[in-house]
Amino acid sequence: MSLPKIPTRRVTARHWALAGTVAATALAAGHPAIAPHGPIAAAFAEAGEGGEAGEGGVVLEEGPAAFLTSLGYFEGTYRIAAHLYLDGNRDGAQAHLDESHHAYYEDIEDQLARYSAPGFRAEAEAFTGAIAGDAGAETVRASLDALLAKLADTATATGATAYDRVMALHALLALAAAEYEGGVYEGTVEVPIEYRDSWGFYDTARARAERLAASDDAALARAGRDILDQLAGVEALFPSLVSETAADDATQLAAAAGWAEIIALRLK
Image (tube, rainbow, N blue to C red; front, side):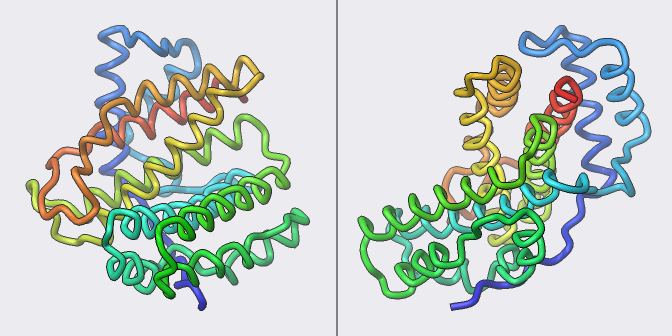
């Protein structure tokens, strides 16, 4: 079973103006977890005033950070399908795999070769096969665990720096904010797949931040904790993956993306 193709997704300048405004407010109030200063604070203030990121969207860093973000697209898709299946929505899980355009394996084969990374095709096929064959919760859960472990091995092969790892989180959270805005209007889920994608990218970023927080490296652990602080309460935006209603303001996701960039600069 092939997986659908990843298109180019962009976060508009509107998201970054929003993130800049919110985080600037947090700075003015004296945020308890992070207190950027000097060039980092100045850079963030400039970004907030200009409302731009690169060319006004999610502009991936070159190298490992971009590849880690691409892997996050896959992970988010798998997390969504597994969540739907394990929640009893088996047809919905299959439909999401069929309709998603964020996880087409052939798109990353060149990057896998560049980093001599192990890849995860066999594990992905086992997982999608378990969903398609309605193999049961235990098999689907086990195949997801094996797939996530292989994705982690693939990510490790890049030799990503701490900065790369956090910038990938920044990109995933920015994309989550954009997808939420695209899927939810005035509290109504109008485009369910974008709403689900938002949760998948957020949940992937959250899981990665938890791994950072558990690191033996003090700087990485602090970065993970700080990002998790920013994500506290975000889960409330997603009452369920099949909900017809949701919060009409995803400001916190956009703000968390902005903070993740600040935290990455702290590690550079």
